[in-house]
Length: 99
Ligand SMILES: [Zn+2]
Image (cartoon, rainbow, N blue to C red; front, side):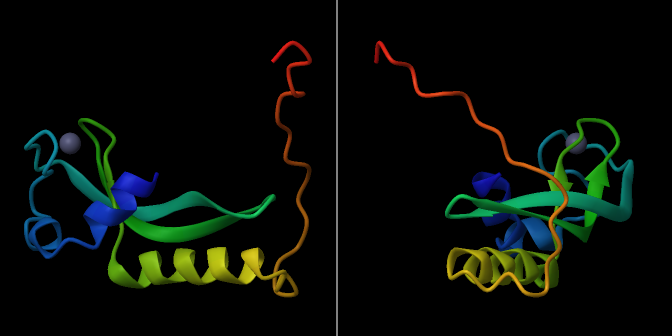
C-alpha cells in the first residue's frame, strides 16, 4: 500500500493517467475504492476516489485522496478518532510462543 501511495504522489504518474503506468492498458475507470490506513493499532477504512486499471487492477489515487488518507492516519495515530465509527475488530495472529 505504501508503495502505491508514493506512486500516486509522483507527477509523472499523474500526468499519464490516460494509460496505466504498470501495464500500459488504457482501460481505466474512475471510481470509489476502499483504502485501509493504519495508525498505531487502529485501522481506518476510507472510501476515496481512485483511477483503477481494469486490466491489472492497479489503483492510482489523486492528491486529495492521498491527503485524506494521510490525515486519517495522523488523526488515528494521535488518538483523534471522534469522526470515525467502530465497524468491527482488527485481528492479528497470536504471538508465536516458540518465537
Ligand atoms: Zn494496468
